[in-house]
Length: 433
Ligand SMILES: NC(=O)c1ccc[n+]([C@@H]2O[C@H](COP(=O)([O-])OP(=O)(O)OC[C@H]3O[C@@H](n4cnc5c(N)ncnc54)[C@H](O)[C@@H]3O)[C@@H](O)[C@H]2O)c1
Ligand SMILES: N[C@@H](CCO)C(=O)O
Ligand code: NA
Image 1 (cartoon, rainbow, N blue to C red):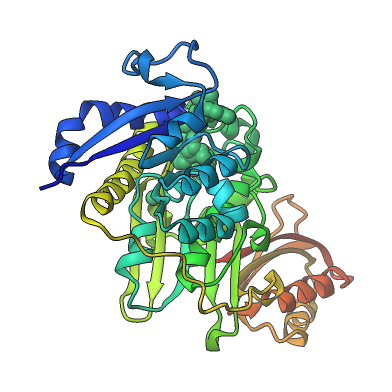
Image 2 (cartoon, helix red, strand yellow):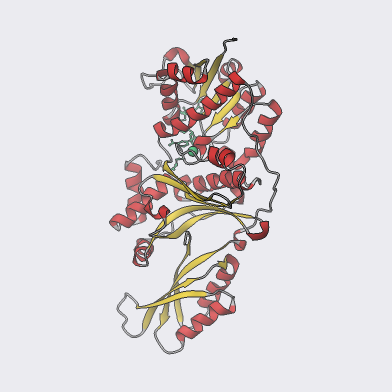
């Protein structure tokens, strides 16, 4: 039988790249046994060959010439991150006939279609399990295991940093700024936490999941995005008070009758009984709902060099087997081509907290504002306003049935215009109920 060596190139030897190299080098014999032919790391492209690195990285593998390395490789692993030069490198690798593994959600969310088209044209594989949910097998189940089903909704915690921050706020009562500092001290949040706390990272992952789940092109720019920077300690305390926990969720759903797809990232109240409520610290979890399968939950470590490297290696092994035995993985599928709708079309439940005058008829006025916009109230709870203004003001907590985002926004506008309402204190979406 013809013996082949699957030559693997790594571009970017940082947090994830170092662990990928370590696994490729230390487990080489096992990987080779599993594939049936030799899987060999042939080079590592970095910005400098002189910088100090983990002793596991052999100096002789390092090069600054990524093009030269790509030309002598069968599989190229891109782990530098960011849009450019990563895109140029991936396209260059594919044009040279190499298959590609990447963890680059930013690039895939922004310009995935260019990469998928290039993979198709070159007849090579493009795998990206590590781009969403780190170590968690998620892309492959959605792309392959559920290929015969119809996914209706994907709902999940896809950013470990913000989950850690919200969990910390809930367990200690800390405010956001302090919790972000703790996340930085633990190495979850970067020095500049913007991509995480403003929801950019989660929005890119939501776009990738929505595209796969609904066979429709969804880019990061199509995802409605609200981060966690407006979340207050009071919001977190109220969530607990009402039997919920606040989570930054990525939601992608197919609207009834295949009217379209809405993808969104925002803080949301999750009932304590829902499995997503129990996802603590920097863990990730994604709920996938499909017509035949029903609900499925994927849970695990969504970040970190070692866990993420596991997902990268899984992709490398799949491609190596294709190289040895022939065949390719599934190509991008966008046959459904559903309209990607704006947030105004989203339908969910809401919890609205209001400060109102405590006098006869106020509740009826408030209820009237909801009714006028066709938003049905599920429950109303009244409490004396916490500032001690006994008898003069009260806080109302209104929970709605499912309603359209545009209707809820109009209701809030109407509430703000009522004399009896001194403030709309918060409006939070309720998911997973
Ligand atoms: N760190 C995680 O937990 C994690 C989890 C999931 C996905 N990812 C993704 O994995 C990728 C890598 O993340 P990371 O945390 O390892 O980043 P990192 O910053 O630790 O490493 C990136 C490495 O790439 C090198 N590099 C940058 N530009 C280069 C260039 N032009 N040529 C050669 N080398 C270059 C840098 O010197 C650095 O060593 C990113 O796309 C990231 O989003 C990371
Ligand atoms: N910053 C990301 C890393 C994984 O993509 C997170 O906190 O989940
Ligand atoms: Na994953």
